[in-house]
Length: 234
Image (cartoon, rainbow, N blue to C red; front, side):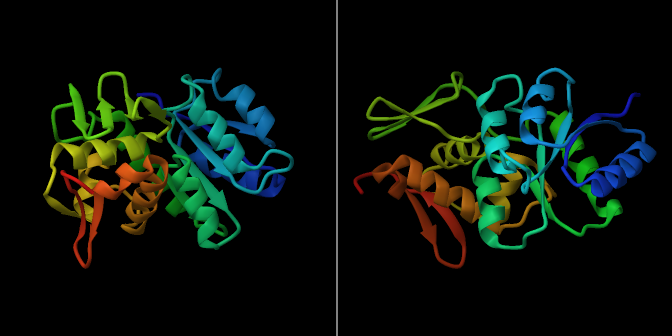
């Protein structure tokens, strides 16, 4: 069976060469882009199974590229691993909030990167990990979630959510009143042993609350445990 195609977006020629060598050695087909504009031109046409995207790029940076990838229906579902030479939380949070599937900080071990890629591709190729029926309309107060159309509205106004934010909101709305740990939420929306930190759930919930406005208060933090979706008056 043919290995996956990976689009590597990296402007440093030495790092790009290292990635091409190590990923090629593993049998992957590697396409390269050294800037964001080229990556956006290539991504819809090369049938990439995964994108390895550097945050620090000349011109359009990686977060801007990711934002455009997630807007385009042709590339919205392609798994993206962000790479960054920075270690600040703000860079990691920005990528996760925009819909990145994972991140890795430079310098990184090629073996670790390959393991992350394998795991992400395996998860993406499998059946949908959500462990509940994915149909119907969920409506609580002014908040409405249409599963089939993948649309969330507040008082009739559409809210732009990432795929992960949508999945978390759907999971919590389907189980109102129940408290779930961060690891349970990850398992429900991404599958067991998905390689993200529990802190990423906090980032996604923070993003959800901001985007939803007042209805975001239905998502309550249960200190020391996790989160629940509380019905009723706020």
